[in-house]
Image 1 (cartoon, rainbow, N blue to C red):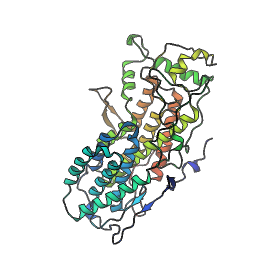
Image 2 (image 1 turned 90 degrees about the vertical axis):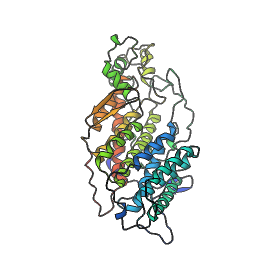
Image 3 (image 1 turned 120 degrees about the vertical axis):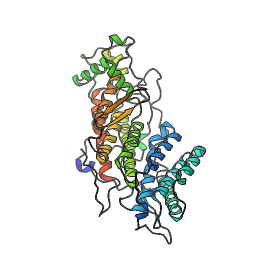
Length: 444
């Protein structure tokens, strides 16, 4: 059922019960300490690297299934720690008391460290030297001491508030349905699907994972499905002989380019762009926090839809195309994809949703016409230029067809879903407090 625009834009009051802990906007109280009103010592003459540094440190210690959630925890903790001192935006969840002159950089570093040390206690051999190196760049004194105290409070509070959000819990075993439209485990590995427990996840910003759930996919016996089927069958096939392949070498490169996960792509792009933008520490922390909030909640929204509709992947549909009840489709029992299919249902496209959400945040905070160069591990030695974030996501859109992973309608719906989540995040999270103008560019 489609929700009204009023329902879709309703601000999240951040009230969700997590294992007995009431998640709400929290102000930490401490006897004899209060928010700093003198922020002059925190003014920066140039961009500080600490947000980017701890973004990379997070990437070093996380395991893939936990990466997006961990990045989000780290970045909302860094934002709330800095903002506790500078008091320019509404927090994600926590405002800690801060003595006058507290170091925002020390607060950010300690908040990131505290989250990661609790999340990955086995990684202290990596985390502790990085903490020492980061803090060593800040002069010793009361400001550094006060800043680390703020960071410790905020890091612990954010971790505790999200400790039972279910996002990294193993989900139930998947039981495939029946019929030609039902998702089945896919070759060559026939791996169990991931994120099957999404219905129990507590989102970071959305009120519930189903908040933007789209309508279902095209009927498998429709002419629209047959059109998309033919496109993916033609362009997404594995070609032992490239000379006989309908997909061009440039299209094959695009398919390979976007095999990297979208959260890694956009965090890397943000790390590359922010130093030249002259952002203050708080503004850079806000960008990374909003980016990762959009990434994690678009993932939640798209997997909710996937396991609502459980739609068949191209490799299964095309191999069984002669028995799908659609006279317009021609099956090929030997058909294989150019890129291996990931283990979850087809509709809607997760990569498109996450890229779409991330692009909305980047458009909002860095501008719609921000060009950049990028490289990808899957295509070593090649640098490509993109004129904008939307240009990049358009490339990612067609990549999933060229790889044989998706049908076009799934990509359209996934991208739209991601954009809705991204807009909701930038409209409801980390907003300027009264008296502080938001100078960001208008979003699309």
